[in-house]
Length: 274
Image (cartoon, helix red, strand yellow):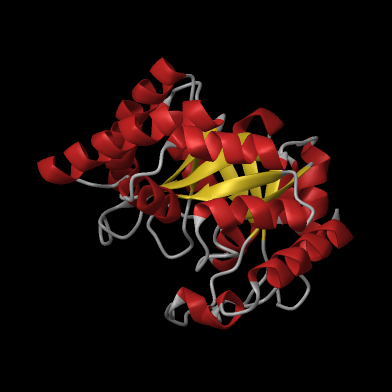
């Protein structure tokens, strides 16, 4: 598998610094954080500059992460979705990123999951068509606290979208935290539907307990939390997946560490499981 620095690990850095940190910390690739990318472009920098930095540092662009609000139902929201997709697809082509991540959030809370899938899939089909014109594919991540979170439901979503350039990112924490998948189920997946993997650890609420702020649950490096990381890693290996794999956390304490130090620690923890 291709060891990838997730831009979330160095959240308070900028995208050009992420490229350097990825190289110095021993990674082969960078999962580009969308907020950093947009900030960089809006400041007047270009995708070509980023492409050149990636090449000069010997770092691949694994993916752009993320386009959110896939569940949008308003005209303005959908226009923004399409505009963002078109912009990021152009950037992805320039920097050589094959994949853009998609996420839905809580805009459809309270609806039956079938209706949430129908609405989200309709938006994703439009996004997929734009990506197809650029040669870009999309990986969907089912966030643990959202209506479309379990492996079964995210697979139903992908089936409903029915586009060849749409698959899944297997995020250990999200599927584990919502009790929406087991390693055995992951191991049975066709690897062609897996576009990326997030190797994570952390904690989760007890069954029946409400969700708390995700940052309270995701401060652990691999091996420091409650998630059986080796079982999940072995499940990914069983599929034959050999693509981009990145480690991820969401936690203010970790973000205030030295960027190179924490990125290196994440890479070392990942390698221990791989």
